[in-house]
Length: 137
Image (tube, rainbow, N blue to C red):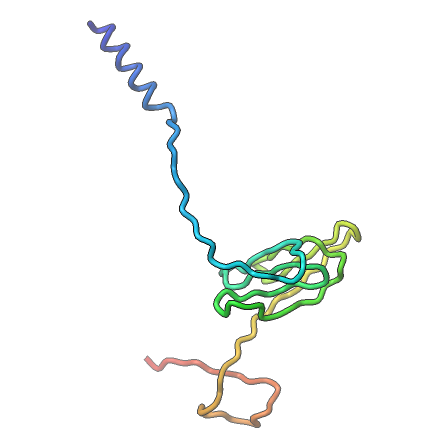
């Protein structure tokens, strides 16, 4: 009887320790489809997922998820065919396999701040505006 119990225990442990195949369904929904007007060569996204960079022949389209539109275009040489985003440096890296070149494009996000009705010092048409946000608590 102990042999049967030991054999049964061995079979049960063996069956439990072997990975079992499990079927899982995937639920998906198309969130947005863009018509670019040019053949996309490569894409990358910003670290926060807010911007999508789309390399097309001759330029990089900057698509803003929150604004739901292409907000900027960065001109590049037609030979560039690959794109990646370096999150730590906040830079785009484009490469050309045919020209054997690499280009690093530094990205700086500029935020427009509406100043109408706010206290302002200096000329209204100054080329640079410094905005101070503070909390006295």
